[in-house]
Every structure is written in structure tokens, then in C-alpha cells.
Length: 366
Image (cartoon, rainbow, N blue to C red; front, side):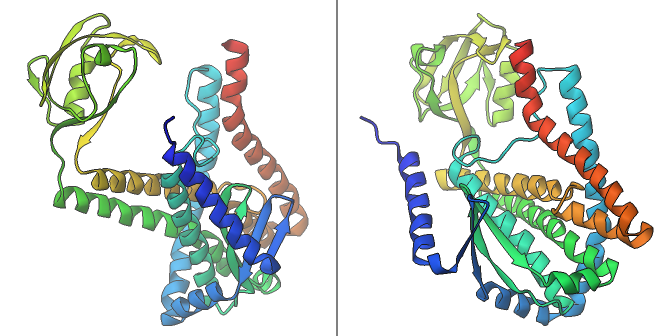
């Protein structure tokens, strides 16, 4: 019986989390049954120290974040509306967004680490800018929302509500700006890594699907594809470009470092019009480099995606708090409450519809 190391590592991860929360149970606050928060002053001290290095810089960072926040708010609102329209007119369209469930719809370790960077950078920026304005954090900490890790900071809400509107907006928008900057830094790291340790020529076969042509032709994991149909293959792009021209039922000559394989293609299970070999592959590079590049890619996607989702003008999240602050400043409390409630309802509808509509349509349309 094969041992599922990935499952074992997932169980071990949550076992460690459970043990830690059990040890710290006196400091754990439970909310809504599935939210567990560990509050501490240790993190507030760290953020305060960073803010005190140059409070002026962090205040201007907050100011610079405001236009980015409102641009992101318009972007995510418009994007969700457009994505829902595409789903309705073309039911086969892939969902624009999805829930992040590590180990279920996302690779566990990549997504857990990427989520950790998102929440640390995001909440850290909120806390640092708040401290730069002398709005001392009441607490900060980490926690779990069911199986998802989270972090939080607690600014003094009464003082924050009395602060200038631009101060509030700077604090609310700092998180997503930090996420965007962190994603850009990670892009630079990927570029540097690719330059310092470029992939070797060829495409590495990581696995073959049982019962499909690649296995029947004798191809094995570990072989390196160096040519297809007489054309050289140096990168995945080379291999993909050649295979796009291959028709279903056509015999393809795959040259690897172990010899030549004659493979008769079949229909792709996901797209019957495309030829399929039943082979999994990746760039020909060391395993550590491949995993690092994958991790960096997930970090970029999560910091941009989750960060910008936080700018949706909805309820208590960053975008909602930004819109609420502006409305209260310019049209008064009563009118602001009505308009904000309407916008929040539309935002919630767009968010939920983009998640569930593809599945509902699939049930009725097939």
C-alpha cells in the first residue's frame, strides 16, 4: 500500500496547529464557532518598532496607497461584473474566482505558505501605518478560520473613527498596496532566479497516465524530451507549439534521452478536439528550483488576487471601510448608510454569483 506523504504532511500540519492552540488555549478567543484568534502584544511591538524607524515615510506610504486602493476597488467591482456576464452568455467559461481551500482546490504547501505571506504583509502594513499615526494597536495575532490561517491587527476603533478621513483611508488601503509591492518583489526574485539558474534544454517527464498512449509507447517518468516530430524541444513552449499542430489520431515521434517513441494520440479528456498523449511534464531543472519557482508563482497570484479582493466595496473589509469613510465624509451619516448598504449588497451578489453560478449553470445546462 502506497504511503500518501502529502496527506501525512497535511495531517501533521493541522496536528501541530491544534497542539499549539491547545497549549495557548487561555489566550485563544473563539468567534462564530469556527474562528479561533490568538491575541498577543508581541506582534504589536514589532510593528511599532518598524513604524518608529520613520513615521513620516509610513504616513506617506498610507497616502500613496489611497489612489491605489480606489483604483483597485473599481477594478475588482468591474471585473466581477464582467466575469459574471461572461459566465451567463458562455456557460463553459471557467469561474473567475474560487474559494481558497488548501489541499482541495489548491496545492497544500504552496497555498499555505502563500496565504501566510498574504496575511502577514497585509495586516502588517495596516498595523505599521496605524502606529505611524500614533493610533496604537490594541492587539494583534494569528488564528484560524476553520482550516484557513489568518492574521489580524486591532487598531483603536474609537480613535480611528475620529481621525481625519485621509488617515483612515491610508490605513485601510495600506494592506493591499503592500501585497502588490510584495508581489512585484517576488516577480523580481523569479527573474533573478531564472537568470542565475536557467533551465537546461529539454522537457522533463514527471509522470505518464496509466492506459494512455505515452505509457503504451513505453515512455517513463524521468526521461527528458529533446525533440518532437523531428523538431528540437528546448522549452515547454517549444513542445506546446508543436503539439498544438498535432491532430487526434496522429502518430507523433517523441525523442527523449532514452530513445525514440512512436505515440498515437487520442482525444484530450478535457477537450475532445485536442490531441492528447497522457504525459505530465515540467521544465528540465533541479527539483528545488522547480518548487521554488512554483511557490513564488503562487505567492504572486495570492498577493494580487486576495489583496485586490479585499478592496471590494463590501461590509467590513478594506474596500467597504474605504467607501464608508468617504461617503460619511461627503454626504453625511444617514445617506451614506443607505448608499453603502446598497453597494455592499451588489458587491456581495457579484462575489457569490461568480463562485456558485458556474456550478448552478452546469447542473441545468450540463
